[in-house]
Image 1 (cartoon, one colour):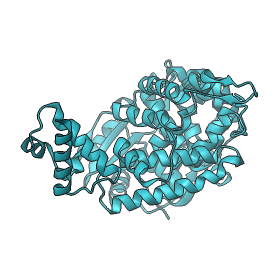
Image 2: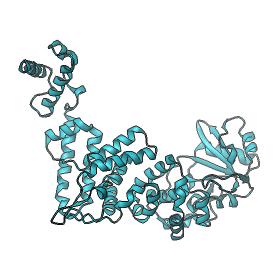
Image 3: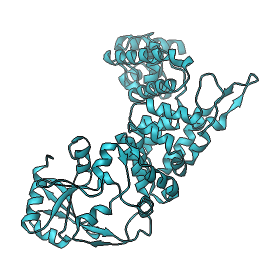
Image 4: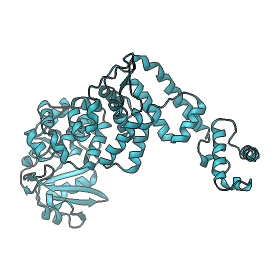
Length: 445
């Protein structure tokens, strides 16, 4: 039996007491059938018309922003419940939203207009799970399948194609062959989808456990959204460090990267600059000089197009730009890494390097031990509360003023103090650094 929030039970009971049907629908029911996951959102479908819903919940706070499509949001004890009248959608001129909706008294008709069978389940405490379209069987078989004709479903709302890919990735499911074929046929409709929605769906897709399989099977769909990826497809690297083409290598790197949005996006783009930077030496070995910088420039352009915020663009592009920088398990160099990039980005760079190596040929695997050692050194440095930025120095600008430094000299001598600490030529101790600064002033005279 599904565990419902008390507020959901209250809503169902009030609607039924007024003589209406009411069922829980949507992701909460899907996730309950999948693995009994607790619900994040509560959606209720009812045969009560919007005005009737408003009358039933007259004593509660109501939000009417979805009223055009039959939805009234009811707030009960600070929990928002979306209550929507059973409906049948009209045409979809923009391939995204119904031009109009008509209300129906039939739960069956309401469920049959939904996107995927696993999302067309309903639940009632007395009736249990109501499955009129085979959603439970598809969940058990691990299949994402459209309700009814998949071409029609996707022509109605092109975003559903990305949702299909996202569900397959996040849940580790397979897209049913007929539904998959319709995705390929209708992929051009994705050009109509708002960039913000594309960004959100692709981020979830990339962070899913089945991302590699989806990227491999639906590269042509990504081509519509990010055409810059196309030159990577099948590009032979002709290099002993790589036994995969650029795209297959990229998929492997994504798969081996921790499922964090910034890292997964960086993994997707890290070698995007390779095809345009390819060159062959006389011995027939392929090289990609400058590809990291080229990839970072392309990354910034794509992320801007997908409406990423400035911080997201900078963090992802930074990882792409530095993904092939030399890394060694040297304590002083790691302090420099932390100083230049910060703790989070430094950890991510190490993680991206590890994933990049795992996506290369066997000859590169011995390098993996270096990254494990680097992780350990980073943690050791952090436990010591070591100094790797100007704000962590035991001296500051006022101290330098007192020593007689002026203007730009102050920033320069503080940087020298930091360099001395990073190189372990001096401890981050006030008196020792003051002595170091005095010596620098004397040497400058």
